[in-house]
Image 1 (tube, rainbow, N blue to C red):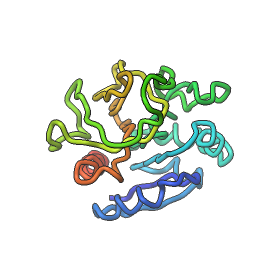
Image 2: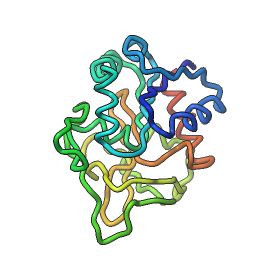
Image 3: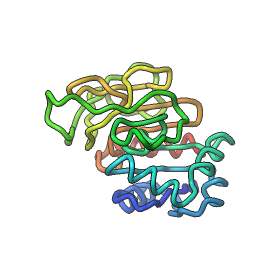
Image 4: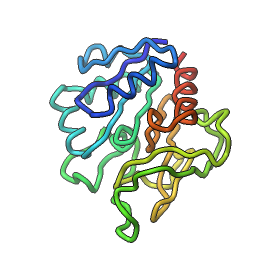
Length: 201
């Protein structure tokens, strides 16, 4: 499987690349618009601030190539901030529009709990999930974030709780995304990536 990894400067690009290669994927890391537009298996990693991701995407003129790849059927996986970028906007940077592929707004998690939400947590599956196939219920995944997507919507396959419920796994047609970091989530995370590669094959 050939996987295209969008390299806009996110700190977790190398670790995601290594995780995909361990599963047998041929990975190309790129910020070239023409390669991203033509990709059939596309991964958008992300850590840090929403504004930094969107600014980098726009600086490299990647917004339309990403949308084109998705609209023409490419299997897409967003990781952490890569999930949040799919939505229309985020409270973290209200002046900067997201990719707008999914409706809704990313909001800050409540200050009644420790932020960032950093560490291991379990998921609640809302409906059958292709990404979570063969993963035992109660499995733990590694999170690191202070903002999160809505907990309800037709695209939400699984939620997590930290102060409030929020989207943990998004699946809509060829679009997949996870709020946690599969590349840091041990065997369960590796299975998520393996499931995605199978979907893309």
